[in-house]
Length: 294
Ligand SMILES: *Cc1c(COP(=O)(O)O)cnc(C)c1O
Image (cartoon, rainbow, N blue to C red; front, side, top):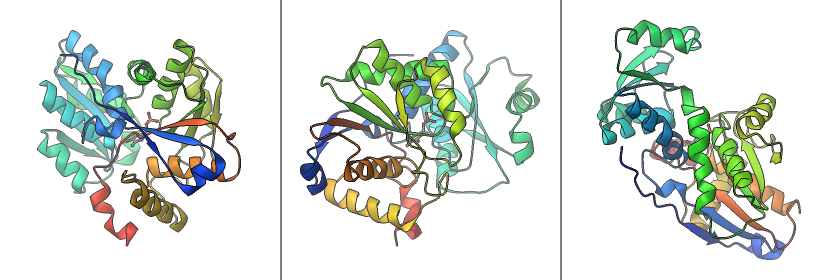
């Protein structure tokens, strides 16, 4: 697999609140890396695909819910880099835009009930035991290879920030960035905004993946849980998009930016702070969310 250059510029955004509180807010545009291998998913897949290539396993098998950005990223990356792909999808058969795109990128979809979905190794055995080319990729791509890929974000920074913020699902991306902060000996504090409800376990996972305990963890911005929203979040997203020209969505990046603005308005970030928000992408489903923004 060729090592491809990525494009992820940093841009500064402004708002009356930022001026008032004297905060400089920058956005790392990982959403611009690729429309479907979006943001952090590109970074997470990079070393996973390298490993599959080295082992000559040209059939990627992975797991996700029916709206999984990871499934779509894997399907597109497989097509782009010459792999075959299969996606084991949680729940009964449905059709939506994400799965339609997965199919377009050639991914074979296997729907499975929620109970069997929990036993991923068994499912892999069941369907792909006979296929020596099949390569297991965990749900969300979580694992050491993904942490390594995400840590590279910090190698691209040319400016020193006081804080980096990132939304967390599995916490792999956050752990990778934290690892990179330590490796580069940056004087930067990592701030994690989990998007799921009840995520105390994530703190330990981030600690063990990154080898560091030096991060803030804001568990109060889940808005009811994964893919749940509230009017306050939707209104925030509308204001943010219309005043910056940067698109964010309600599942991940909307919650992270909401947390940043909320912490700033509550004077939790010191005046003069330079803050970098990582835009992890995830925009491919936004067109299907019309009713949320009506
Ligand atoms: C998958 C995803 C995340 C979560 O990444 P983790 O490494 O699982 O924490 C964050 N933002 C977006 C847009 C995503 O698609």
